[in-house]
Image (cartoon, rainbow, N blue to C red):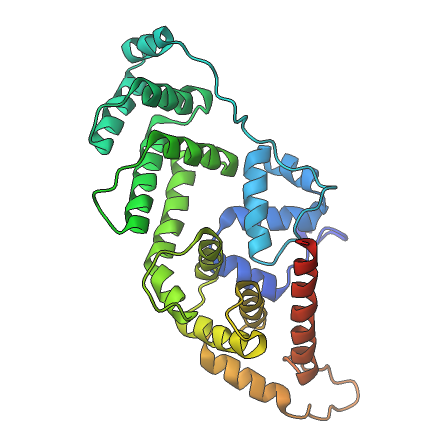
Length: 321
């Protein structure tokens, strides 16, 4: 008999959770979700996956965004963070690195080319901190520098903008915390960011922004989550209209909960939402004795979802007081 069929060895995965994971296309999220279902403990899951705490924290945060995990409280230890105090290097240390470490020398010259100017002593010290103290591979560092510069150019809407080394350093620490320490991990992250870049203005337009501008950080987080779920601009616009009707103005957390509820119900288009809500208002058909109930969304379920949305948002507001 297969081990998969042994008693107490079956892990149940709901179809809604499976849809969310498949649509997100995030293999690490799927692995962590299965590990948590199997063991129910973050520490045990991390050990079984052989992940460091930084990667564990980054993947868990993405599960929270998908609505498949609860926000961790103080009882759950946060992942270890890279120390913000950089190592101390002398000018001699850096001069030796340029002379004896061809890889770092190559990074140095390429960053100068990307910046379009010579690096100052302070810039060089910061670059070596990223290379040596954070131990990011040379190729990952160059990918990071290009990403920072392109992000600034997009935000400022000018190709003439050049990044500062302090901005590169800040993003390097963030990448380290997220576990983006390999070329594969960095490439996957940058692909997701490219998808968000391509959708950003369409989503902002869908939620009522009229003057073209880049998204602020919090807006960007929601947009990224909606893009990962595969939500269309039309569906987002519908959630925006519902939100404005209920709240009097755009409320990103409220719109997010509406979209998550629709996604979990299996509604991917405006037509599916309209048809699903119409079906929910119809009286439930009478069932023969012993017949299993139909688990399609009901009017009561819709009301429960609305009430839950209001209670959740009220509790979140109270936390911030």
